[in-house]
Length: 116
Length: 116
Image (tube, each protein chain N blue to C red):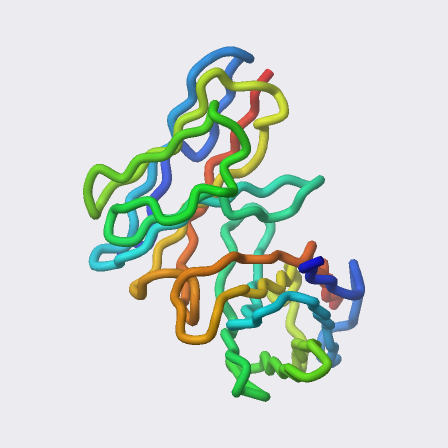
């Protein structure tokens, strides 16, 4: 299995621009998670989906952030407009089980976003 | 207040030596506790997951312990190798018993460096 695939691996953009991060979960997995990691705040869960349905988006920092999962093999995290404080590494993870309790999550390599 | 505290913040050991990392939490209701290993520039990799009824779980040279009464967990690494150099992150799930929904609380991690 190829594991969780994220693209792009690196993104540099200017403040105010729209940014779209992409994720392909492991085939057959039923849950998908978006995380953000910074030196200041560590690792944070932004949103997660069960069977393509958003379950908890309470970690999404602002309305500028949105996430979609149109099908079981694809998800996007969009930031519009982007700001310098959005600079971080964004990870996507997937798991076979539903929800948070007791599941093993498999992380992608991350997208390093820099907003100038 | 729900929190996860890890110690030490950083640790340097010589190859072949053992070490123990600590994770204390105040999260309630407790569902499970995960230890992740994160190599520089890569996504976290799950080492162990423990529920309230599990005291010890091993994964190769990694052994995690959990004391649900004192709300403490430790990760013991035996016969360390250079490849163990990484950040180790403790994550606690808050969820009612039997529920797959909940919230994650993250420690800031322990940065381990193994010297030859």
